[in-house]
Image (tube, rainbow, N blue to C red; front, side, top):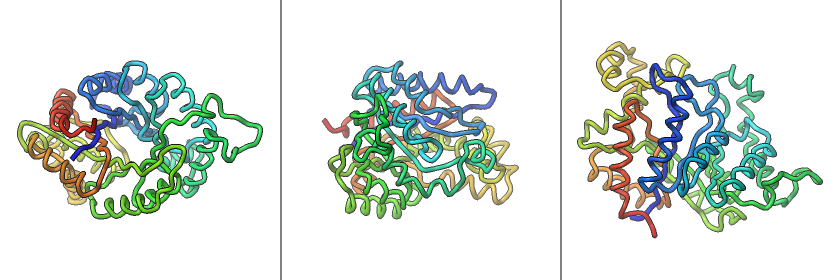
Amino acid sequence: MTFKLSVLDRSRTRRHEEPGDALRNTVAFAQQVEALGYHRFWVSEHHGVPGVAGSAPTVLAAAVAAATSRIRVGTGGVMLPNHRPLVVAEQFGVLASLFPGRIDMGLGRSVGFTDGIRRALGVEKDAMDGFADRLAELAGWFTGEPAPHPGVHALPAEGLRPPLFVLANNAGADTAARAGAALVIGGLNGEEAMTAAINRYRAAFTPSPWWHEPYVMVAGNVAVAETREAARRLLVPEAWALAHSRTHGVFPPLRPAEEVEETLVPAMTERERGFYEAGLRGHVHGTEDDVATALDSLVARTGADEVLVTTSSYDRDALLDSYRRLATVAAGRIPA
């Protein structure tokens, strides 16, 4: 199977690490994966999350694009309910003007992690319900059809066409189809639902100024190492952080896999352990041969055009080695 291979980095902090360190490491990581031949490098938007430094994705994307030369750079994604569409259009217009032909506009519908963050952002949970309308308004600032506010122009965005991607769950796939956007969908933990959503997206897709035909990017964790156990251990820090967030309401900085397994897991409650074990399931991991087989099968089942790898781990060297091994696996599968 042929498919493109890309990276989403969430600027995860590690224990005893400052947020600025994580941001600088994101920029350095982008340079490393560009050298490995990856197609895109995306950054994310999180607010008030101690374990994630990336709170301003278009600012961070500018730093990444300035430090690289070939790889496409984008957002996975800007959370549209948190922003006025005009401002988002202007930001991407600036990025696309500074780095022509390299900027992707990835958008999502999530709001803040807690009630306090949502209040600070000036949004409520129901703001997600207006995502389709905000998406249409944003498109109008680029195309002028229809002009969201007659006489007002989003400069320098007007007339530009940075590729539009919608980060979607099952229901959001329908929104992406109506908008004529590329679909970015996670769900390796629930692949049957993901595949059904992809099929609906393709069936309902409406060509647009952004995309003439459907385009599907499947997102998830992929870990590659010399042994299956070593690959699994790469997933341990994020699985622990996810379990901690679900049970304590705080998403923490990552900790070493050894500490998680030897100290933190034995002290878990039954509920925490359930979330932790769930966080280890459903990912693609193993040796190069294991991962090659798994990815070929995934792409065959979903018809995905691209795989967006979202793996984070405490050990940066081991993580980079995983991405290096993955690039080797994918080398013969990247379309010309």
